Amino acid sequence: MLAGSSRMGSAILSPMLAPTYGTIIVLWASVMCLLPIGTRITVLAVIIGITCVLPMMCIGVLHHYGFVSSKTLDKPRERRIPYAFATLCYLGAAFYLDHIHAPMWFTMFMAGSLAALLIVTLVNMWWKISAHLTGMGGIVALIYQIHVQGLSAFELFWVLCIAILFAGMLGTARLILKCHTLPQVLAGFAVGYTCVTLAMKLFG
Image (tube, rainbow, N blue to C red; front, top):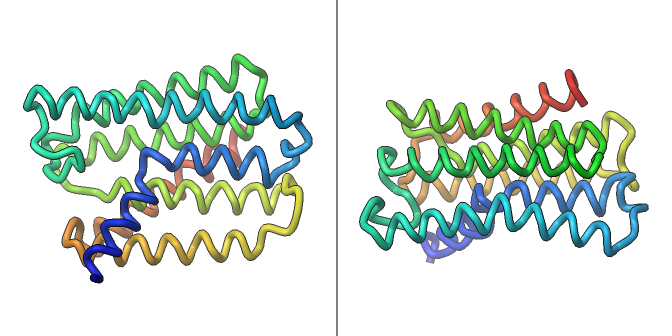
């Protein structure tokens, strides 16, 4: 039962969904919630398509032709092509946000996520770092930066606490499933948090 709950949590908090969750937070919990609902839904749909649907399709094709043995990418060596493709997708998402003249801090969230994914891709060539926790680290950093920069539409303290709690639960789930060691989990969170924080503080 514990393993089943851990697998479900890992799926719900998949790293491919991190940009989607981040975009939802930006569009519904920051000052951008003042935008027309149609505009927000359009932006969210495009981000989902670029950062989630396309990478999932890439993994499906690779799995179909035998380039990866599992759609969960359990083997570090098999992550290289999907991660590289996802990096290009994140780059495309950042260009899209810049094209529609999104606030720089929003674009920098995506750029920070791109930098984090690039680091994870490179590190995975010799060490298995947790992409799940990298995504959660980026989400926590986004919420904190929206909070401290005065960009929130309402008090985000408890939202931040919940995000940190989810990060802890996700890290525990990855350990229960024996997908990662504790250092790999902590390293993943640190990479995601640091990259998004630096991008939003220095360039946002």
